[in-house]
Image 1 (cartoon, rainbow, N blue to C red):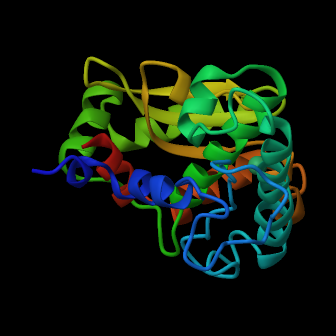
Image 2 (spheres, rainbow, N blue to C red):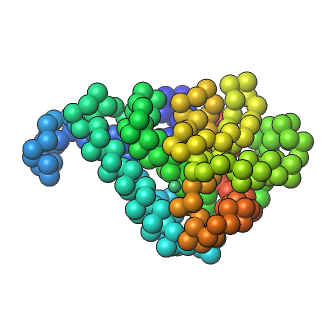
Amino acid sequence: MGQVAVLPGWMLSLLLRFRPRIKGSGPRGDGAHPNQKDNTMEHTLPALPYAMDALAPHISKETFEYHYGKHHQAYVTNLNNLIKGTEFENLGLEDIVKKSLGGVFNNAAQVWNHTFFWSSMKAGGGGEPGGALGDAINRKWGSFAAFKEAFTKSAVGNFGSGWTWLVKKPDGSVDIVNTSNAATPLTTADRALLTIDVWEHAYYIDYRNARPKFVETFLNHLANWEFAAKNFG
Ligand code: MN3
């Protein structure tokens, strides 16, 4: 089996989207930025895996226009500006997240986290996973209902801005992890399986301050368990 074939699909698409763009070396000259040096890495906003109105009424098109079109885009723009002329200029996104601190880390991790979050949802999602992931959830919490209760409690109780994750631990078991601000399992030994963004900008347009209703809707109508199962491997 080739190396590429064992990568989860979302990771492969990230790699393809964030591949280096060699300026000025293509057959067409790629001369859009004639003042830039060769070999600079420009990060771009990945396409959503669905239309901006696909998750309505649970998440509105207006939320995507702000959350994806403005917030996620701003992290990409900030990252590109911050890494110019630094050691991070020619690194891929995941390497930047793992090696940086401060503003570079915050923006790079938020680019990665949001891309992961969009794929953690789908139209007609929710329900519960079967297979190996379903078994692992049952081993950890006893039932899917108990997992939902624990995940909801964790996401609702995640103080301030952050993310709540279902992760696979190095020993193969699953767990729920809260992170604050831009922090991400990508810098830990855990593998991210599924996430919900609990920054207020994720739900304020559709749910105002009602984070519990947003978390409940995520679990019942949006969670993409096929994506989580692929990440579980
Ligand atoms: Mn967000």
